[in-house]
Image (cartoon, rainbow, N blue to C red; front, side):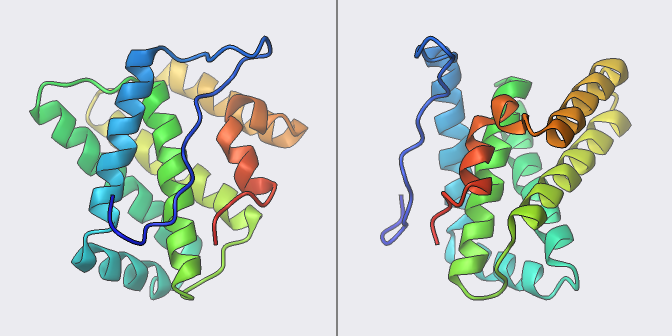
Length: 178
């Protein structure tokens, strides 16, 4: 990690019996994906471009979603070139962590302070961009994706989204660094 990076350790998700619900292999892939994302984000030239892109986008939420999508796509393409597969659920949770980190970065730099609602909107926009790319490349099961998106939207409406995406609750409940 780069010097001066203010990050909290990422704890694995815990099920209701207090046991981690990820395998050690999944946690290792998650850690690798998030670690690689941080290397991309905190490369000095990249950091400046990210902040500028989001701040000058005219719509910081859309700018954040686009940058998250670009980072996730870069990581996925890199993994594919190395003949490695990143499970969808691992990539989803890593994507949420990446979104949170980018929102924190932009806030720390004073370019824009994201509200909880903006972060949530950016998450859904990034998911939509990701889904569109997967669809266009023929890599998506449309029915499964519809079901997952419907499940996320319903969880958002009925207030149970933090059960599906536990680390998102940290953002909504003010647990972001900043």
